Amino acid sequence: MLFPVPPVIPSNLTSTSLILSSALLLKGEKEVATKAQFKKWGEETLQRLFTEFRSDRPGLYSDERSSEKLKKSGPAFMWGCGVMLSALTAAAKDKPKEYKPRLEPFITGLEVYWNNAGDVGGYDVLPLPKPPDRYYDDNAWVAISLMEASSVTGNKDYLQKAKRTLDYVLSGEDKKEGGVYWRENPRDSKNTCSNAPAIVAALQFFQMTGDATYKDTAIRIYGWTNKYLQDKDGLYFDNIKLNGELGKRKWAYNSALMIRANLLMAQVEKNGVKKKLFLVEARRIADASEAKWIVPETGAFDDEAFFAVHLSGALLLLARQDKDNARRDRTLRALTYLGQTGRGADGYFPTHWSNKNGKRNRTSLLDQASAARAFLFAASSL
Image (cartoon, rainbow, N blue to C red; front, side, top):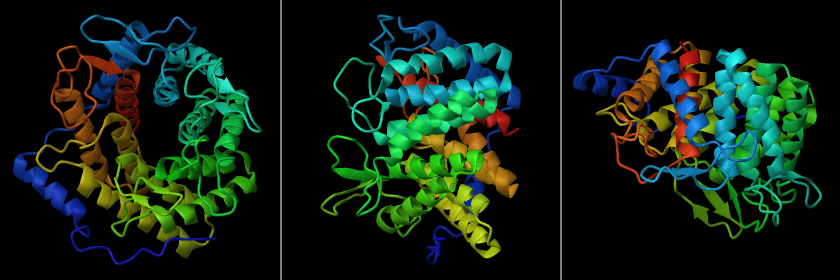
């Protein structure tokens, strides 16, 4: 099995936790919100989505809403649907009687996005009928959340839906050169945002079913992603073009999913030495992520909602694994900042999570469902 051999960690990252903790102490640490408060923020956000974003299509939601004219847009893009699925699943885990009746029709409603064109079907970017326009990363997010929904509800049909969705994602792997493409057409780049969640989804499916072919596939993609898309600081570049040109922008969700990938690799690895190396690598990426995306002065996440929601979740998973209350509290403090200062006059949370009550003309399902998921997952960590 491929396993990480971490390079020498730059000296400016070796004490990231200490630096961040010291900076927050000097500025005056904000209290972490309570479990009840995180749940309140998450459920309030979902309730607004239920009433203000509901689509005419059964169980589904609109993509955007005008703050001034109270006008909704057309159907949500699959990107927003994926994060809404994760938010509903988190809510249903905590309050099944209240939120399963919201989760189940949503999953059923997503069938209008399923496009069987080509050799392998997958979720389209918008409802059919339309020419196919499918993204491998969109489908990877949905596969991960469908597996979570199956665990939460006990519904095995959701696991089968996750399998067909994951099979579509893995059909995007370049069998000759390696790596998962970002988009079905054109296949002009391989992005961390398609490879990292593909690894996570494949490993989770292996854990749930015992099908080792998915584990083998995850190991292969893990090795390719680290070889071609990881920077020396542990963080991940956005993409690589077919001509070898790197898109060097770094987004929090890419590194976040590789934290999760390393945690899962450690769980499935039987060799004790290699298991420890995966955990060391997860911590290295997490420390570098905190250094880049947590603002020392405020403790806020310095990235957009969809990217930051994944970072918050990955950091909390790592903190849970390590029993690291300091990392957990830094993450919760960032979400406390969002909950206490992020809402605008319209009551919605910002696109960028370090912003204070910024004015917006429109707000999206993607942004608000990201906040709901983050708050509800945070509550589950307390």
